Image (tube, rainbow, N blue to C red; front, side, top):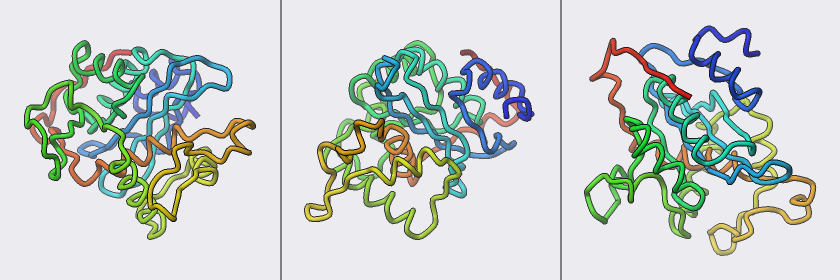
Length: 232
């Protein structure tokens, strides 16, 4: 419950989001965290959700969820900025596709979020080495998606990724993976359940978080004792 949260900034953000933010563990002093996000248009109703997960970096433990289809991609950026700063300037990765471009541009250009994921962080990256808005986030592709799914499945199988979120567990149960081709089914959902409201937004955020986890970087050691500024 929001009333039980001790961190005043996190409590204020959760109150502002009116139930869209669920928190199982609050940030710890010196803790390192990864946040990943999948952006939607914010159309309400049965439309897709903008979703984000917060992982404890040291344990690959899912400790908070932000999920809503009632805010624009730009507003989503503001909430991600606040959430990331609350969690000690978490390493923040956003899927780089429409409508995620608006979220990334806002985080990079307008809010100046200090620890955005760039493709250049990946040791296997072979493009331009400049960390610009053009290579912020994670670009979906058959190769990238395949790697994300395979890593996530292995982490779940071995118990190295844990989640208390029943909504995420439900999305995992409805996700389609093409074992014969070892890649994502383009539909990415079980059609007979899609009509009853099945989504994969939260699952995509979780897979992105686990995918970028190996190369996540942090500046918390450099800013020990700095004042936290949060705006939403």
